[in-house]
Length: 81
Image (cartoon, rainbow, N blue to C red; front, top):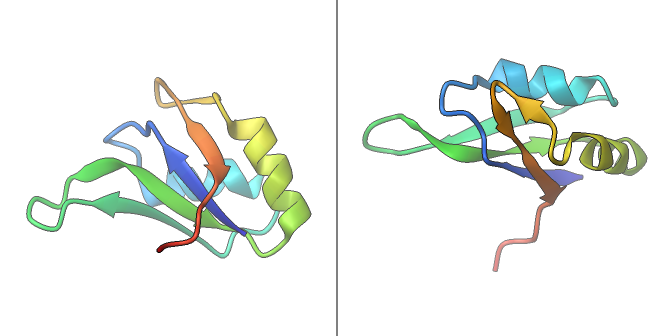
């Protein structure tokens, strides 16, 4: 399951994101999207969890959860067009 995560603190590292989701199950990857010119975080990212049930539990538990001073927006990612 691909999970979209937004409203991230710009200082948040991928390991922090991985650790937050790992409490709910196996995490294949955690990626924070960065600006290609500056390398600075854009404040959102994606987490890939192979188990759909664990992914849904993580979404329900972490939506509006405060991580490094900001409440995350967490939802199932929409497929790219």
